[in-house]
Image 1 (cartoon, helix red, strand yellow):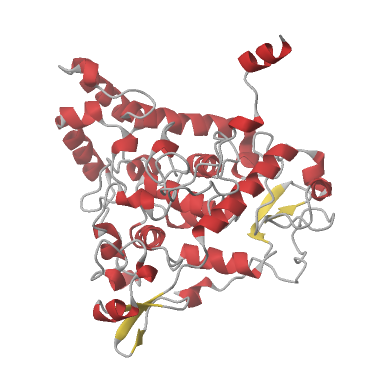
Image 2 (cartoon, rainbow, N blue to C red; image 1 turned 60 degrees about the vertical axis):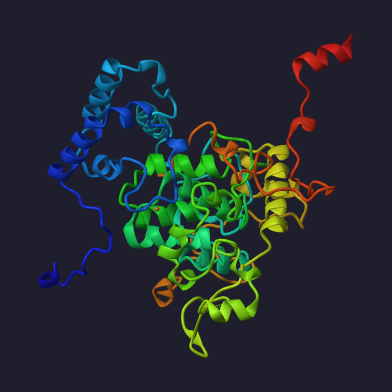
Length: 435
């Protein structure tokens, strides 16, 4: 590779059919793991080795047949002595392949529109920040986007390069950039954080990053999973968000994963590893890393520097929940004529989250945003992406309202944190009310 002028691989994962078949044989030989595998119960913080099969890159590159994996796993489950204890669809290994097929089928039905909001009849229209530009002749996104908010663009770049100031999120994004892979629950966490759980940035921006960096990228799975995690399609419980603090503590209370991928914090104790900004300054100096500013790296007085959180997570989570709730109430989908001509803005308050001001149509190639900025041509070099899921994702500790950040005793639930029960009336209740 060096003779060809190529840099050495930064990922420890290797391809090829020989490696793929060896990994498959090892999986099949472990009957207990194969029969009881349940993806939501695997640890997103395991990294040496990882807690899942890591066969998805082989499916992507064609070094392992999906059918071969299906039938060999099915054979193990069928012959298992404790079949009654075997995990079930959708969380078992067979279920993961079915999710994959589901997204492939959805893309086959919709074509290119499946990977975007514009002109997509199955995706909720949500006025995210940094929306994609659209070619008016083809109704397809162009690969560039509008910077409607400088703050959102800053948050996006900090998210992409692992400098948000939230160690769990930063560790995941650094692992992704370095290795080309992160655990599916890690993908959940960073996707929720970028979209409906913090930044309120278009899921298409995140999907592009995953497309660039993931070694197991499939357009259908990647686009479908980002829509799922953004609650734009497939999943609608937008009031449940992954906490970047409570969620990783479940599987890694000591913070070993963070310390590995965010080495600035390697001397921080578990009390502060997910919230280092709360540590006294004297202790920060003692542990060799100050929490200050917006940029990681560098030193100050011989002490490393790690950024402060880029926003108040609880506050931003509430804003995002209200924004998605409003979009659901408006009830538009990507193929609605009002989405295409821009009159959707009349249905949103000008001060709502996202680029809701005025009544201008969608940004097309060649136009600039209101402040004259384009999202294409961003020089990311100077700053030198599949997500899969399960039906119980929000039940994990750290999921909003269900085992997440504890509410202070006697405290009131924040605006936007309540469930949707009060917004809908069950058929039985309607019947009682009529009676």
